[in-house]
Image (tube, rainbow, N blue to C red; front, side, top):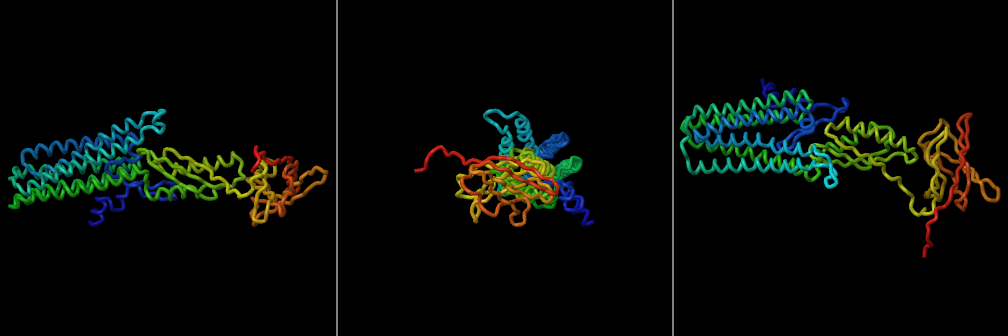
Length: 441
């Protein structure tokens, strides 16, 4: 019995809806929804928008019926509940306007489009709910100091039941559609509507209290409902302001790192930033890769990471992947331009670098044959050949480096000699020191 009650409120085995995916299933766990912020899985699907429309209609009809009884009975508890339902219903209006504006194409002035208009809609929603709380609270306090008889207690109780049934209908509708479109946010909103229905049942309790000879039961219930509305104001304001200040859910950055872990070739994630533009998420990731990679190989890594990000984060709209600049050695301002190696046995970058031991020839490999051996043969002006054997650095076969520095000057023709098993090849290249264009004083 207790498990069924917990499940009905969303705390049981079925109450988590589609949000219970784990990483092994390749899905990102959606985050809960609060008043004023619509999740992308709702706003970007026809079924989600359809659910918003019908929720608005049901709550509007419920509130209208309650207002009729308020006018006849004079109950401030029912007034507070009706205001609550009106606020819940009218929040769909600014969001719907925002969705229409968001679909407009970017312009030269608004190069990112009008996604931020949803944040403005969120502020309007918070103000609507706050105004409803202030009105309900004022009426309840006024009735405490200026009691008035509450009439038609039977109709009052019936109106409370109507409020409960209206919210329960919205709850069942949102939960069912949310599970159909795999939206944990819509499911969470359904359970929220279910708890809102309890405030309507509080109106029934107030009517019973008045019937039992406790006239202050009605305004006290009105104050309790006001406190509940103020709780929604706090929750909504915190959510809206977080997004306006480019805040994201705490686990989102972890999700980005998790996606990068599945992509071969990424050495580490240097930085990960994310921000919301309305219900669209923009992610900017900076990654470190082997700086000897060819452009095509690096682009393949970036494409794989983007695919992983879109698979892990359903709300993602734009993913930008940047490559971190390789760490440069200071003080080597006269190094020649590197040689891009592209042969049958290896691909990578050959350059002169500064190390703690001095200048060295270094070959950074993005692709190489098994058991690759490398040597640089520098042809000097007097006909001599300077030979520099390249060996793995620290046991890493992707970095081959000479044991001694190349002789001055660093302007020469040379050959990169590669061998692996019975195969070999010579790749000719030339290096020249850069012309700085001015003398240093």
